[in-house]
Length: 534
Ligand code: TNX
Image 1 (cartoon, rainbow, N blue to C red):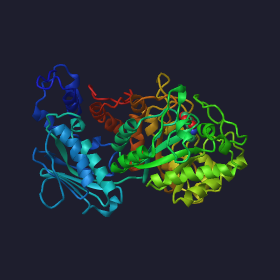
Image 2: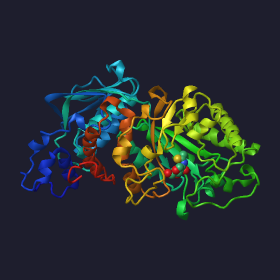
Image 3: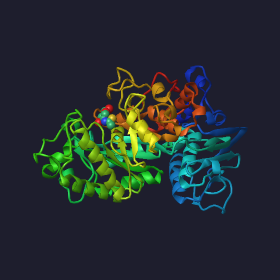
Image 4: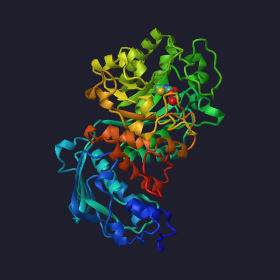
């Protein structure tokens, strides 16, 4: 088939791919598409990822963004965010105003939403005259904007001006999350990623209403965040990575910039300093304070785990941790600091328990709540401390006891949520110690009924970690994260009643054209019927 007018624009072709029925794209004899054909097939509500709590299309009604449209908003930052995306792709001026001065166009309002949407949900109404998103809080408004963006043609998120029309399915959506915490983790310790690379990933996770971004900032291979008064952590401890490259680190100003960038997308950053194991880089930098024998181990560029431990019996270890934790707390507006705690195979069990008990207190003394990998449940947890379950089993006595004691549990079973697991045995990147994880497997489980003794009410949410022993570029990140991150984001947001692989597979397929437009190097899982051209 031929699209003479737009033949040279890959973005425009991708936009058409998003909108045309699959048959039209696969059949050689299909007639050339016209603007009218395109406009007749706006993205249906059934394509939205994560699936909304409720969505009612109004048959026949659509809204088409006009060149003179105005964005009216109670939250200027969200209006500006949406306008910046749509100005690039539509070429329209899209001025952003406070509400009340105009009608029609796009309205983003902090009034009139039903109470059922809570702090993170929204209501979206699309009529022929305009689009209105209503929410109780700005976070909900931002989620509603993501839904609106998905309902527009994929080219609406493109980097260059497309031809439109920019048409949205009419109807009403009332939507809110199943879990308050929907997270993604990036390991910047095994391989370092620049601020620009991290921002790119933050932009991508925001598309799917992920609202927590966990940064794994220190491990055996590198320390990646500047701590005042402890310069060697970064200048020496941050100077390498897996494979022996030059590593890197964030200044505190760069970290704050990431926190602010995430906050503009209603994403909370959770910094992790892994301890008492996974600490070779710190020990190599400050052996007198942090190792029991005072000797510096060499920097480490391999991928083994479990060989390092802070000296839990030295007071200087806790003075160091107080400096690290107080500075991270001051830089981090969110409530959580992650204290690691996994695979401390070189720490005696009794020392581990005493260490975790004490570190929890240090975190609390700086006004923050601890998250730790689930081994921390072997210590005496504060009820506010959140164990993050990462094992491949479906029962864990210590985690069940923590839940019984009032702790909320964060669910990251490695066999289902680890984005560094290979999809199939022939996946070039990644590991397979927790199994192979195709997208259907990542989707097909129920976080609220998975771990014995940890029911729906005990689940804080779900997180998808991406460990980076084998991951070195944004394309690598994207290949491992997409499409699985979208599946996990849906598990965190959508009601269990929407859970259905067949329907989800279709929703996922509808993301292909968007990922193409955004240049996301996703894995084209054969379990999904991706539209041709996407
Ligand atoms: C286990 S899971 C680890 C990480 C590795 C990961 C690789 C967990 C809390 N620890 O140190 O990077 O496996 O998949």
